[in-house]
Image (cartoon, rainbow, N blue to C red; front, side, top):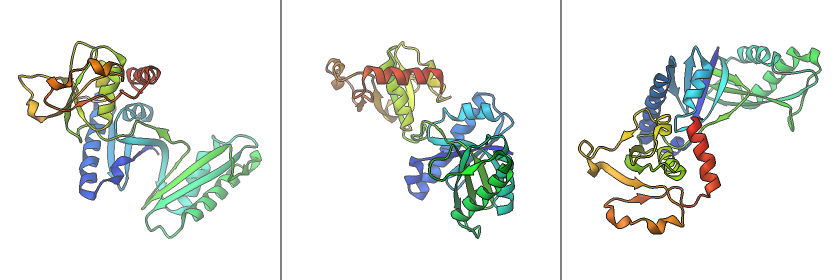
Length: 281
């Protein structure tokens, strides 16, 4: 059965209590994003992995790519971590993915006490794949293979997959407090707000620019309301400007820190990132 295997990065560096809190926020963000996109899915986590089961795997994959905190994911076939099950699933999985005469390799890793090593996994699964495709004239090449298969065993579960899909990584939105972002219609203001979201900040917007692209990445994003929102809980103000334009910003009128996330970025870098943001990728 196909399943999405999700990995995080920075969260793994935190202490156990902080990591658990961040994992809880990340799980909530995943569920909110999937619900917002109308994707029915089950989200679970154990160890350093999240698992997403959905009837529409492609729709779920498009949705979770927008969630900050996820470093990468793989669309995997799941089985038990028994060696015979992994070999059988990997052999079947490889049949439609290996062509005549191609070379392949298996990269394996495990976590738990399964009674075998990662080297054992790679050897046995590789042998099963070779035998299943022997009539195609395939060959093993551990140095520069044309096709790479990945096998990951975690306790009593195992996953066979072929690709790591990179995501935005960062920290889950909502773990680093609230900031106000000025959206003035420029690419720099949009990218600046997005970069702060990537660092785990909950954004509230002000200004007359279009902030709708940012809502793709945080379902709770909304304008700042001075009558409703307690400004004492705002940690900073975010503005989009380059090094040349910072001289026109009067930071003395703010009683909170002012952040300029794109100050060291070129116009081309900002434009490229703004295009990604607007596309919702």
